[in-house]
Length: 253
Image (cartoon, rainbow, N blue to C red; front, top):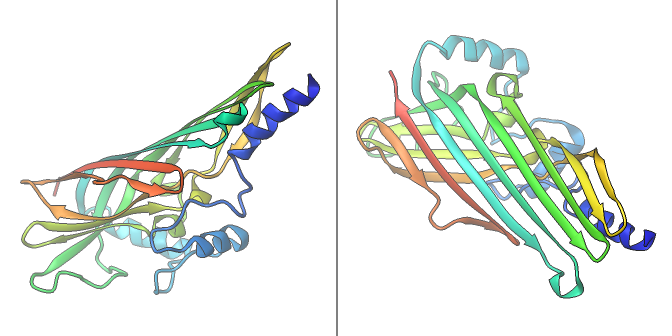
């Protein structure tokens, strides 16, 4: 029976990996960069010099008065591990909800991409990102369930975490948006409880979850009145995982 219990625990562990190796793929195909970031703690760059913490704080303070858009986005992930025919398997459901305050970027780090009309960039300077995780692993030995939730304040995240969150709005109402953040910055501690054939672990124990990232990625569309809204069509797919995203931001300036 102890052998069966160990099998259940091993399957539960398989759906969470070490923080220095497993990262949700980055939007620019930078899985290696994401792994390097976790290992070295050096901010990722997008071809420009990264802001220092002190510089970013000053920059955000300068821009807070020029709020442009407010709203929220939601990203859900569903995925299942193979192995049902052998009597084991795992489901991992993640949900990320973000409330963002987009501020006019007076000194944008990215070149304008609308060649025919002028455009403005906005970056998030306030709000929060909440991560909810539910994982279930099962085998002949029993079942282990992990539940975790954590909220990250935008102001508390380092500049490297925010560099793939920006919005470009053209004078004619078109927009291009990027919503991305590697899992290194959104690590969650979940409580694991296991039920075995002969006993249960009702107290639970803490387990790190470090594969939750924002992958809605680059999106574009046209504003409806003062609102930027849309959804991923089709869903974003990485391996066995499928990601659905929705967003809605309203102009407030």
